[in-house]
Image 1: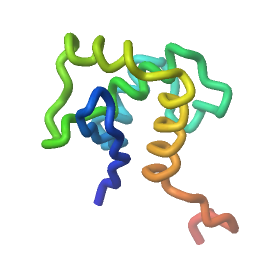
Image 2: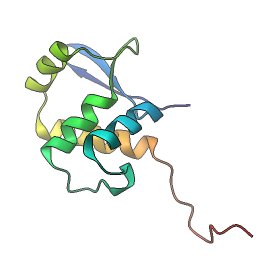
Image 3: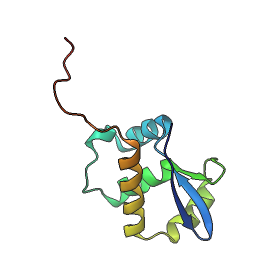
Image 4: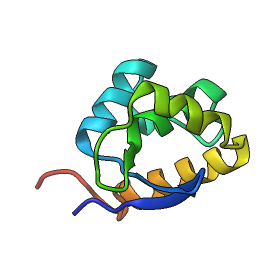
Length: 102
């Protein structure tokens, strides 16, 4: 099951979700695997991740015009916190130990 990070922006609830499709779109747009994205993200990386993971409260993709209004009212700190949470909630945790096939 995919976990959603829900935030109210401009009085509207939006869902941020790292679906498989969102992950593939992010990798294609940034030209790197998700696992290579570190904590020192650029504004472009934050924007790309937020843009690819945001959905309306009903789960539909956001249109470009609506995204422009969202970005204009979302601070850098808020965006970074959302991305951090969405990546933390939705990325598998390493259990450590030997991962070799035996």
